[in-house]
Amino acid sequence: MTQKVMMIKVRRVKTENINQELQWVGNSLGLFGLRDKDSSCFRVFITLVKKARRNEALTSDNIAEHLKLSRGTVVHHLTKLMETGIVVHEKEGYILREATLQSLVKDIRRDVEVMLEELDLVAKEIDERMG
Image (cartoon, rainbow, N blue to C red; front, side, top):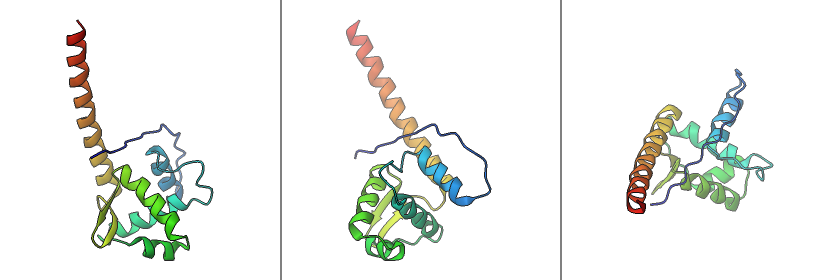
């Protein structure tokens, strides 16, 4: 399994606006690109975050209809979110891999720690072989 983990240091401006906070979380995780002019990936992400609390999976058609986006656009963003390991596909549809954002961040932290441990081990082995 390949998983892409991206972290971007984004200056956080404290706000009471939950959408801006969600935008900051997504930007920090490298989820939203500059090409996403209509914030469609952000909107897909928010939809999944809301449904995750109730453990509700959504199909790409459900999301497309709810957000008034094409199914192709939704599938494109879902694929990107699955590549990051944030979204999983179940037989009922797509869902965040955890029910809360805090649990999701904890999972990502564990994933990164495992990846770094393996990188450290391989780097050590290479250094030893190179003398």
